Image (cartoon, rainbow, N blue to C red):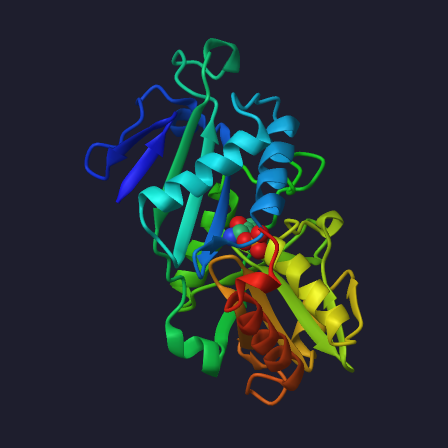
Length: 289
Ligand code: PMP
């Protein structure tokens, strides 16, 4: 594995950042997770845009243009000779003093890791996954806007730990008002009476690129899809439920807090969307990069 750090490639064992990097010391930085399908990077443009918006929101000036960043990502894919895989793109505030002040950091650290990711066991994609509702609430948007995809994931990590302790692999997070926000690393959709519903950033959901892709697929399949406030009751009584994310893709959810969702099998709408998604990523001419 060849890892890109600030314009140079390092072998896996040699790739390292300073212990004074504020990404490590304070989680001060932003990141993206991307997928390579059939030798092409899925929705590269959308990921780069989100990265630059996150950076802009935290006043982090990335020392490359978006076009240069795109080229760097594609170059890292080539350097690693990958046709399928996962990319982790990270920009930290960089090396600085042992204080929180970002002013001491002069040069952001840009890291590109090209590797594999398998978030959930394969059989879950056919059988569905069981999840819980975490008691850890999403950080409210007036404290920290969830659209910033930052290196501060401790809020999500705490919810993930709750999932693990309950014997699950994922947890739903609610916002302070008790509405569903999203899962710890995935967006959440339900199907009710044939309509797709998903919480929006106002409810505490990241603007997921897979979520947006699902919205486009729904339009293509003439399925009505809307952003909507959802409560745990809406999840428990949904006809179908699924999670979306770059790593997870489309994962049917069949049990939430012990309640069986729908028939207990992946539903018709979920399956149609999942099949369409799989066809899309199997044919690079059908997705933007
Ligand atoms: N929510 C959170 C908290 C995430 O970290 C992610 C990415 N893993 C998602 C949703 C899904 O976003 P995307 O489809 O862009 O990967």
